[in-house]
Length: 126
Image 1 (cartoon, rainbow, N blue to C red):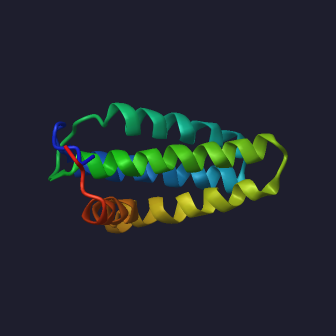
Image 2: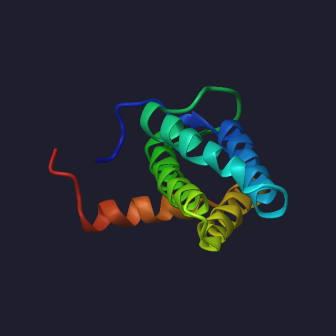
């Protein structure tokens, strides 16, 4: 459902969080994959409880919470694969790294486009 019941979030928060996710993925790929365990926690908190408010222009919180839920899923998959001893954890980690970089550097949120397209094709019944 489209989230108009929660206030928009400030863009500075989104860029900062994307930068942190980008750094965590870099550390996971090049130093230690144990930091992957942070991503599902971060995605769960942002996706199900929302964002903190700083300054900057406001953006749709629903789309950003949807993106955070995707982070939760991708982080959980990467963490589970790593804990199972598979090297395939690098695939979701690299995907998250790329999308976090695009959000952080260019303010391009791929999940926000998916979020909007989903509700154009499947409008809420509420």
